[in-house]
Amino acid sequence: MAILGIETSCDETACGIIDLNGNILSNVVASQIETHAPYGGIIPELASRAHIINIHKVVREAIKISNLSLNDISAIAVTNGPGLAGSLLVGLNFAKGLSSSLNIPLIGVNHLEGHISACFIEENKFNLHKNEIFPCISLLISGGHTELILMNDYDSYKLLGQTRDDAVGEAFDKVSRILGLGYPGGPVIEKWAKLARNKNYELPRAWLKKDEEFSFSGLKTASKNLAYEKIYDNKKINQEEIKNEMSELAYAFQVAVSDVLITKSIRVAEKYNCKNILVSGGVAANGFIREKFEKKSIKSIFPERKHCTDNGLMIACRGLVDFKKNKIIPSNEILVNPQLNVT
Ligand code: KG4
Ligand code: ZN
Image 1 (cartoon, helix red, strand yellow):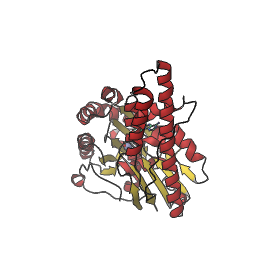
Image 2: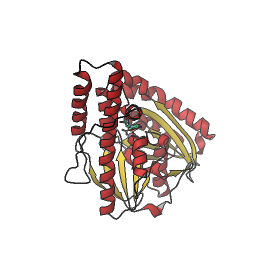
Image 3: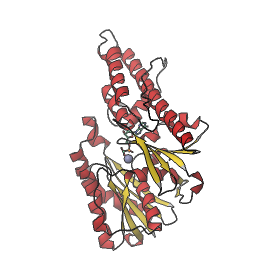
Image 4: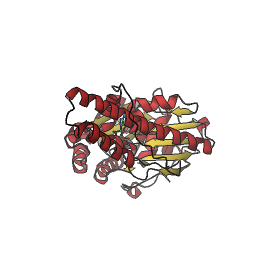
């Protein structure tokens, strides 16, 4: 018997399946990068339409890879927020139909709890009993969120603080757009930053009064100003120099972001006597941030890179937690909640 997880909150149509012991059976992700790349960001209407086209194929493929039949599925877990309303509706309606036709429970999953669950996947298994890591601080860094959460258990947590303006992934995407590097910005900024040689540029860090809070809009503006000063307003610059300036800027941006994320997370972990920091969400795939965290004396736990960005597996994992605790509510009470947050 198994849990089937569906994720459609943003621009990935995804389905993952795990058995009731947490073993991973399949994980299929259909990315919409090609659909949105020409626009430099996600177009919600196009995202919903692509989900409608992809969802059947993705679920079918995940079931095929798992070697199960639909009758082996014990419950369906589905992201019901936060995210794009139209995109969430596609996944939720599909999941409602499937659970009702199979007469099995439907579990609404908070996308952010899903991301955090990916930190508990080790060697192809979701480990439900990793209790030794609690209490811990969870740093959630995605395209829509930047949050610090105190976790005492899988189910017991408190939002300590979040970004006051842009999410960190959003800042990566915007700086990438400023540099004309396209969407999604994170992986491409990471790639360009590796080419930096001089590493002399210093971009500002917003430390704020509260360690638990973040702000990235000033860094974004400073990156834009630097791009204009060094590249766009520099009439004498040649192609080779443009490339160098782009990589120096990408590097300075990445350093400023990781400095703030790491320093604040460690301070908050110390404040709450936590020995572990879980780092999840799409930006946790960033190799530079992972490396910098790993060099610190406090233990940081990241999902595998492929499990950092949106996927259905993390939703199935989180669904399994609720399923084991029998936290099942009638499916007609599970609604789309675009603003759903952890509290
Ligand atoms: O978690 P996610 O897949 O979707 C949301 O829930 O938002 O995160 C997507 C975000 C995008 O902003 C993307 O640019 C960023 O994660 N991202 C990265 C990397 N890979 C994805 N940011 C920095 N470095 C990366 N390697
Ligand atoms: Zn996400």
